[in-house]
Length: 438
Image 1: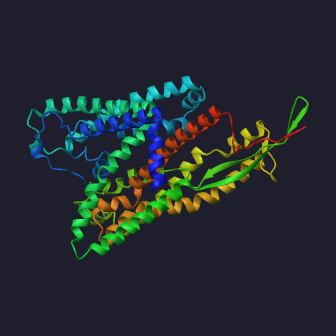
Image 2: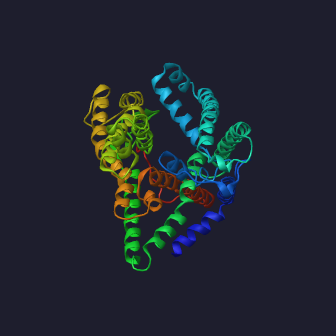
Image 3: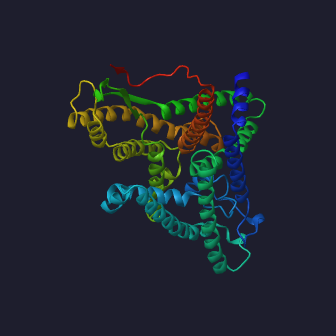
C-alpha cells in the first residue's frame, strides 16, 4: 500500500503528466454530461428505453446515452464503423493501399475520408435512431424533429470525435478508446448494485462468489491481451571504422490475440441478421419463427455455437490481414536480421506463418469462450447488466484501454527517472545491446 501511495505521489509530482491527467478527467466529464442532455423536442418523462439486441449493445458502449435519447446518443460508434470500413478498404482496394504507403500525407487523406464517411454514417443512423423513439415522447412535429435530430446527432458525434482527439493530444492514451471504455464503466456501479440487491441477504455468499469469479475472468483476459510468442532474431556483425560490432539479438513479439476485439465486433454484427431476416417470414413459416426466436436469445446454445464458430473464423481472417509474415521476413532480410536456424526470405516467412497459425488457435478458442461467457453467467442466475462484465466486447475493451493507459503513465515515470539520472551525472544499471570488439 505504501508503494502504491508513493507511485501516486510520483505521478502527480510530474507537471506534464499531472496536467494530462486533469485534462483527460475534464474531457471525460464533458462527455458524460452530454450523455444526459436530451434531444430538443423530446419529453424525457415519456421516454421508454429500448435496450434489446443491438440497441442494448450500443447503449452499453455509450454509457446509457442511447436510451436517454441524448445529443450523444450515437456517440463515437459511427466513427468506429467508418474506421473499420477504411481499414478493410486499405487491404482490398489498391487505391487505398497506395494512399496508406504515402506516409504522413496519405494518413491525412485517409483520416479526412474517414471523417466524411463518419458524417454520412451518422446521418443514416440518426434516421434509424429517431424511428426507435417512442412517438409519445416526441412533443413537436415529427418531420421537424427528424431533421433537427439528424443535425444535432451528427454534431454530437463530431464533437465526440473532437473530444477523443483532444484526449489523445492533450491527455493520456487513445482518446476514442477511452470514451468507449468510460461509457462501459459508467454502467458498472449500477450493475453491481442491482446484482447485490437481487441476491438479498440470503444470497450474500453467492454474490461474493460471483465477484471472485469476475476477478479471475478479468485476470485471464489480461493474460490473453498481454500474451506473446517471442521469435528470436539475430543480426549480422557490422564493421564500423576499425571496430567490429557483434550482432544484436532481439525478438519478434507475435501476440496470441493479434486480432484484439475485432472478431467479436464482426461476429456480433452478423449475429443480428438471422433474426432480422427470419422476422420477414415469421408469420407464414414456423421454421422462420423458430430461427427468429432462437437467434434473438443470446443465451440459447444454437446462438452461442454459431457465435463462437464465427469468432474463430474472424480471428484467423483478421490476424491474416493485420500480420503479414512476408513483410516481416522482407524487413528482416533488408536489415540484415535472420531467425537462427532458418534461411532468410521465403523460409523465414513460412516459419513465422506456421508459428502464427499455431498460437492463433488457442487465442481464438479462448476469445470465443470470453465472448459467450456472459450468456453462461446469465444461465447461472447473474443479472443481464452484471453479466455483460463477465466477458465479451465490453470486458476486452476495458482491459485493453486500461493497460494502454497504464503503459502511458509508466513511460512518463520512466522518462522522469531517466532525466534524474542524467542530471546527477551517473548512469547505473545501463545495459548495452551491442557489444564492441576491438
